[in-house]
Length: 75
Image (cartoon, rainbow, N blue to C red; front, side):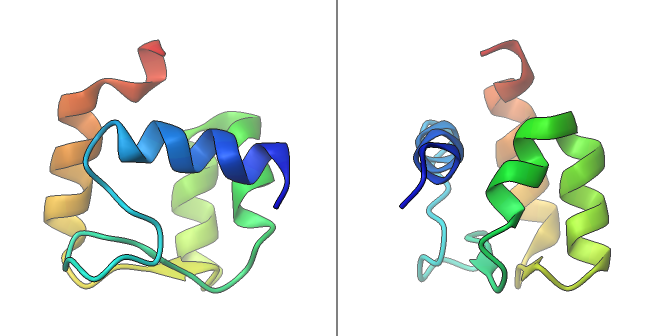
């Protein structure tokens, strides 16, 4: 696993989000390049990667609520 993978997973974990976890708000990653892309430009790249099919999530509303409440961009 790359440093980018570890960094993104740790940040998400602090928001109670587990990559490839079993909760409906947990994102399922289909392309490992996602982690580097997120670290480039944060939420913009996250959205682009979603549109490109690099990840999906059953409950996007819950995912983004947790993400925004954790204020990860400040970390």
